[in-house]
Length: 402
Image 1 (cartoon, rainbow, N blue to C red):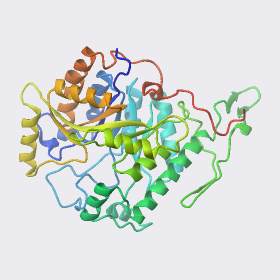
Image 2: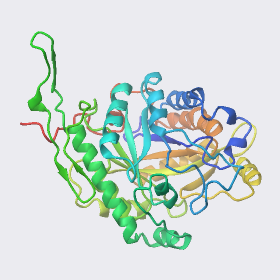
Image 3: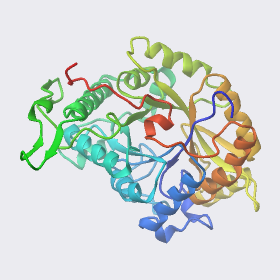
């Protein structure tokens, strides 16, 4: 094994990341909202020894930004709740990390903390969280508690080009940082040995080892403690997807791992520099950087490029993405991953263009190539997700007395 083996996860989003993926021959569209579909996908990922799966979610149905989601009928227009999918997968998997997306903007951090702590218990220490900010007017209207004006297409393009967020978006990221801080404090509000469970003395807990968090901020006022004991990992993994310096700052302040989207031609160097600058004041473990790629791999019946072209024809439009779109063989993808890893990327999150086909190709084609090059594990180590990702498995509790 190479001294710095690759870390590899996948991002699952319904039938796949291409809007016409559900129309591919093997996509099982009638099963998209069934438990067997999701358990089969994650079993395939675990067979490939992957580090984790992230499960995409939002408070609007899938569809392009700036387009009302009730207009198109030729795309999948429904979702399952990512956290509940992860909860279903937890008892039937053994090693792979489970990282659902949960929106910070309309979800109370107390609920998030207990839900993810529960997932960490039911999975035996394999839970994570992809914290997502919602700047969508449509999503805000589902709740009716606040007004959000989302960026126009021109404003969104300027945000991507300049990395400068408008004031209302800045507030959303400030709120998200507070939400993650509240969740983390609640995870620590029980010390590890707070549970006594002594029948003879009739003491289930040591009340002195439960702590009020007394968080007071602009967006939240939370007393605590949690109603759920400290998770097995202490602090489950927190992740974020980021495309701009301000969002890198949010990730550096709140997350353990950030997903970024380098262009293939430019490579990851500039983004790595920006993440490092955003992390200048970070204390403790450094922020891990994972590069996202949408993949359409060659199969026995068609090249990745031909498969993508066929899906574009079915959808009537060329597929675009915030992340680099890779088409080609497993060997070529392995070359790209090795190159970016050598430039300092800590790991990769692959987005299967067609979930069934490309996840199978990642497991059956890409992983063996990486193993032959001694760039990827040949078995899972025992332990929690934090250990699998190379993070400390013992996390001090901020409230515990020394």
